[in-house]
Length: 249
Ligand code: AMP
Image (cartoon, rainbow, N blue to C red; front, side, top):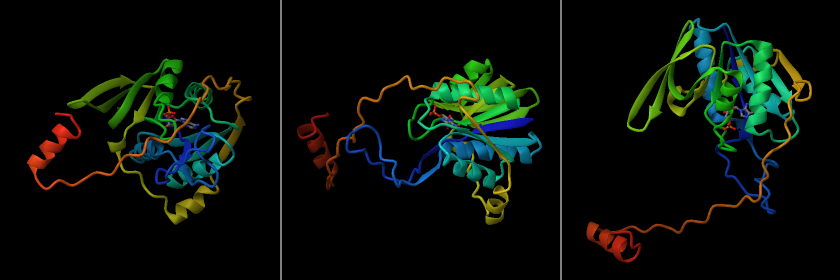
């Protein structure tokens, strides 16, 4: 079975995000970029599946500008076998990403797609669900455990007050959550090996998908600055402040 893992290039999670002076978006110039952290977890899970004999090929796919090739190389250095780069000059919204991925699924015929539960830049949490709907495939979302048995997958989802165990039929789209695994670091020899692994490039036009934005960003603003906290010396002072200053009790 082949596993497809879509990986997005986003601002590195350690970077302090700055809003552009004209409020049109966030500053990307000279900002460190990296693979979306949930996608690292998805790559790791695909690699573990391959290592345990449940898959024979892991293909990573990234949609975006030429710099996304670096993200693909990161996936290959972790251990993926092959990469696909879909060249796109601007930010592609989740529906268009899902439509492009559907075309890739049509060409590659994977048995499973592992996506991140959300991209940490747009926080949309939509692509996996839209892809499953477009393909008419089963989906397991926000999974913190997954086991594949031939034509069925059992996924564990963290829900309020417990864990939900679901059996879904294959092929499926599975979106991964934080506690599924701890992604590996790429070793130096694997980084070198990754340079020789094949990466196919294609354009959104070749895939025949309409990717024009449907959303208009009106304004992006910094969150309001929070005022500093105070330390109280005992419980009665705390209760007094909550009652008379914060007026919440
Ligand atoms: P989102 O719906 O934008 O929160 O993204 C959810 C997941 O969809 C991500 O974690 C990726 O696995 C995948 N994805 C979204 N955008 C892209 C992209 N431009 N290239 C590759 N994968 C993407």
